[in-house]
Every structure is written in structure tokens, then in C-alpha cells.
Image (cartoon, rainbow, N blue to C red; front, side):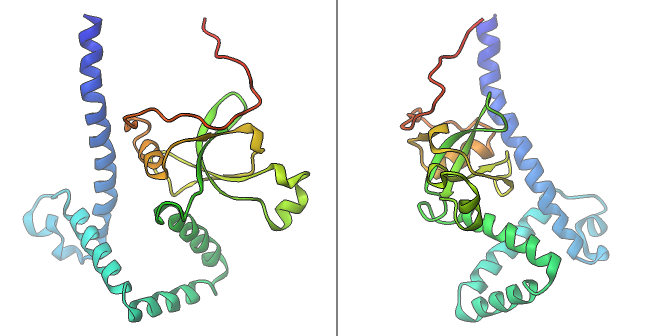
Length: 215
């Protein structure tokens, strides 16, 4: 009885999680319909809401934007727009931070993040998946004692990896994973449901030295 119940959960849990994530994405993308005058929105024309139209519109807008900015004229307009935003005090900080994170997350593999790590976060009793970005530099490097013993890491949140935490753990307190950035991002976005076919082996080390205790 218990075996069949667990088997059923293993079938339905990934499907339910996928539907839930997609519903969140479609719901968020449907808000793009607010850009259309109310009289021309699907609900006004058809008399009932039609989920997914906004998502299709968002995909088209994103694709057309990417197609337009791929040429020289589009790139110049983007640079002009970014220069305008960078001159507005509050907007500059918000836009710059979000853009840097987005560029890092969606850049080609090997350019954005160097390694996939396990770091102690948010406290020493738990581990979180993170990406190594660089080594501490500037004032951070000067303030940290023995700065060569620290690395810079980005801890993304689930299911949205474009928000997270920028931390500086000690090198001996992290575990390096033999896992690609793409696989790690899939696990983070799916809340661990999209596990790799082959388990990732830990190639790093840490100071814990202990074993898990079982009650």
C-alpha cells in the first residue's frame, strides 16, 4: 500500500510542480495585457478572460526586442537608453544591479559563473547551492583578513535565480561540485525536482569532517 502511494507521488509531484511554476509564469506574463487599451483586451472583446494571451504577447515582444537589438542600430539605442537610466540616482542602482545579475545568470556557460558550489547558508547547519563569481577585490579584499582565503559567491533563490545573495565564504568552507551551471540552474528553478541523471560528485572539501547523525 505504502509503495503504491509513494509511486503515485513520484508521478504526480513533478507534474504538479511544473504546472504550478508554469501557472506563475503565465500569470505574470499575462500582466503584459495591461499595456493594451482596455477596450481591446481579450476579456473586453470576448466577454471572458483568456489565460495565456499575455504570455504569447510577452514572448513575441521579447523575441522582437532580441531581434531588433541584435543589429548595430538596436545596440546603439540600448546603450543610449542605459546611459539615460544610469544618470537617474535611484534608478541607476536598481537597474544596474538587476542587469548585472541577469547578465550573469543568462550568459553563456563558462562566462558568467566559474564553478558550482555548496556553501553554508544561511547558517552553519545548512548548505545552499551557489555559484563562484570571482575573488574579493577592492575595499572588500582590503577589509577581509587573509583575503586570499575567501571567494565571492552568488546564492540564488528558488524558483527565481535572478534574485539572491552575494557572499564571501572561506575557501575551505565550501564544496566544489562536478556539475555544470546549466544543470545547477535547472535544479534551483525546479526546487530540486529536476535532478541530474547522474549524481554530482563533490570534488572539494570542508572543515566539518563529521558524518550525518541518524536518530
